[in-house]
Image 1: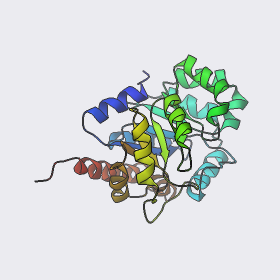
Image 2: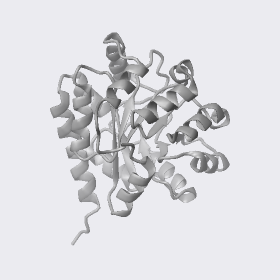
Image 3: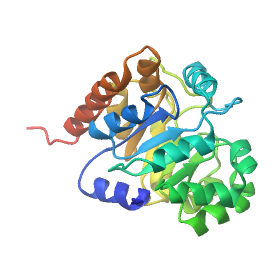
Length: 264
């Protein structure tokens, strides 16, 4: 069963929750589906699944290493989607990959495969708004929600257009750079969240560099929630498996929930 990404996130937001979307690298180890279940069970509102690619221009060393290991294990876009199709999940799923693998499979074939697997959305960060038509039309026709990214230098008029075309949620990038853990929340996070929220009612999630519960709470003050990738994947790379993934996402969930409780 496919769960609408945007409808689910809107419902969670309207119920008073800050949104939490962890990133899991598809095909990273034999137990990667168990990791996916673990983060969903720990309180994720949706899960972003990275489809490994050999030239991940947006990803830093942690996600690059996870992608390398997954590719060496034989992970492919079709194989990952097929594994997801063989399982059931209680939260919406979105894949994150790059234009090359999508175009290689063919826009309509890839969109149909996602829809057939019950995957709600897709993030293709190197496919700009001006070149979205081929993939965007195929995704829309298949019922796959295309999540678009907005970065700190994005001009106001383009930011509005990105928010209007994005489906599922708007991915607000907190800094110019690649993914990876950071000691501090990027200074642009505040402005990025407020700029997106000013031009759209769609859920706005901030991502890149959010590394611990404290940063997640701080970032969510300016948006509807957060995406956490490298800090989670690093725990899996170190051998923590589903248990470590569950524990970390649970810590994030508890911190975000406590941040929305009224103070006395």
